[in-house]
Length: 254
Ligand code: G
Ligand code: G
Ligand code: NA
Ligand code: MN
Image (tube, rainbow, N blue to C red; front, side, top):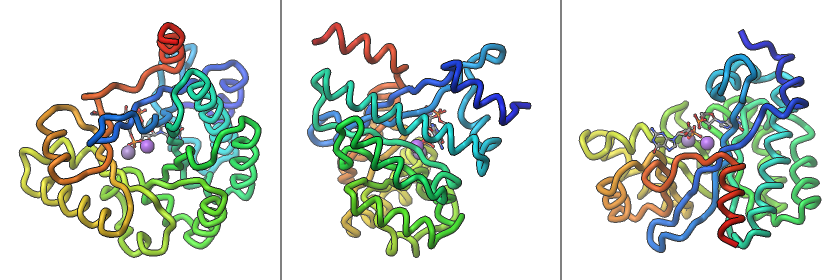
């Protein structure tokens, strides 16, 4: 069992890193930005997936601390990417439910964006439907404050959690991410296809952007394009790339 206290030590020891997965504009093929995905290189267990440790840490002060590490490090990476010539791109940061009700989140985000000289508009905060049921009033308040400062919001894994159609109206959200379970099934399964098509249409009609996740082949890409999906993310373009590898690649390109 992973102990919560191991996290503190792991941050100090530099066992965490980020992998970055490109998000691509479907029409232009332009790089829109990267999603930052947390990796724990545990000395004994090897690479541990966030699916294993985030649920354990959720609602603990260790999650807040690790979340702060992810935020600071993601913004620093965006700054480095900008300096390497990747301008006009965004970084998407995953936030868990507990982080959203942390009274320090707003200030921390604003301070870090300022400290690194990064435009808040280039920072996309991803939350899941589960985040929204934690404390809807507190979450909405934090979101509105951050939105006023220029930050953007995406709803991740859309369609897999509690139905949030009523929240969609209330929430200052810029983008919806269609979960990969629908995308992977959509060309073989009529229900998945209908869900993808209606989600894209609904989200666009609400004036938001839509990202399809888990795009693995050209046929899926073609279909999403014909349905006027805005953005795509998935193995077809790239697997999540280890930050050190990405930075090395950039150096050789400059
Ligand atoms: O790449 P992948 O297997 O790592 O991601 C697994 C899950 O972990 C995904 O649901 C992803 O959203 C989540 N995740 C990845 N990084 C972070 C993070 O920094 N914070 C939170 N809260 N979740 C993350
Ligand atoms: O919950 P979230 O959507 O943030 O999770 C992203 C997860 O999906 C990560 O584990 C990431 O590695 C994985 N992922 C990204 N692209 C693909 C893909 O094309 N196919 C599959 N199967 N998984 C993907
Ligand atoms: Na995500
Ligand atoms: Mn997702």
